[in-house]
Length: 152
Image 1 (cartoon, rainbow, N blue to C red):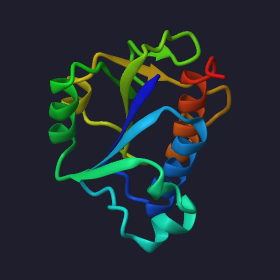
Image 2 (image 1 turned 45 degrees about the vertical axis):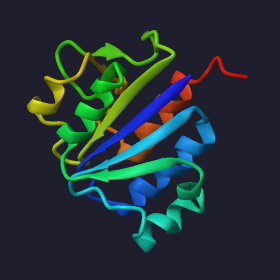
Image 3 (image 1 turned 180 degrees about the vertical axis):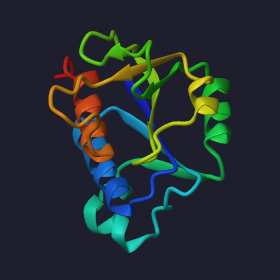
């Protein structure tokens, strides 16, 4: 399995660092795309939570998420977004392909319609409590481990 992780305008360097660690831990992450306001790997706050994982996974910063999406589309890789939309599919019932990209959005505003329109599908994590969303780093961990659940 090969996973491409797209971080769409994440504002917290700590969340980005945590996603690097989870990406390394889950395995199978080929590249992390740091888009827009998402910090690059030279931020000490990112390194504080990544604990060296930035050395384990290829990453690149893009001025916009659309630039990253274009690069991914050029490789014929399907793109999925994690977002609460009317037609989103439950992440636990989804059949993850052998190669795919997954977009995680801004901590408060989520993923824009423009970006969602460029995705093959949308996935969601069911929320059983009063809150309607999880921290983006926690969400990434859950999704990455679910997608790689059958890997030895």
